[in-house]
Length: 343
Image (spheres, one colour):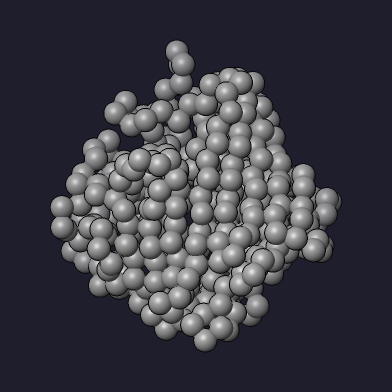
């Protein structure tokens, strides 16, 4: 079902509702945004488990990236500049001196074309123009959301007529107790990641890959988030909690398990599978206090957490990190699967 969600710069914004057995969601054509995701708790009661807004204007006016597709490049680029070809790309700075989530040129702030829709799936299309925000090439991206029983699948396809950067993700904030239920400190998290990329005080990677080695950054076994988030580990102190790229363990299959999240009161579990090499685990450290959310909710710091499947951040400024350059004419593809259950 497609309904109106207001307008952006004089053009209508669509809200597409998808539904399958046991799960439903709403997708906006603004930012290809996941606005609502409803799953049953252990008593069969539906709970909306992602943060969002009731108006387009709120998505435009706040930089929380609630539910949006991030591109052409997710995460930070140090100094809003990186080597590219025989020279350097100069991008817009929007996070101090750095570029975060592609800046004001990002796909999260654009109106996408509705390409196809059915009861259980929708595909949205956007072409990021050559030179916008400093990114080369006309980068055409199609993102498909579709529901299967108890699962949300997100698939990305991208192609450019010039070499460019391509590192796409979804920036949904999850709270498995319900988006209006308070903080996520009681959630249990487990990551299939034996190492991560440490950062400096501005959340820029140092270039190192550090083993978690049983320390406070070690999430290889289930951990209550509140037991770790304010620990003495320097990395947690610098970021005000978790805001780190974890290097996912390799597997024989391209699509492999990356994370498991569990909320003890609702009983809802989320298992994330992806084909990307890294996962940015972010605990909503910078959500503004008293932020008016959807359905009358009032959000605050640590109200939701993000599981952003992506490449290593600031990759082109670190020769040891895998490149995020998409070659002209080559198709870039990625898929993530969010599987919900009860424990």
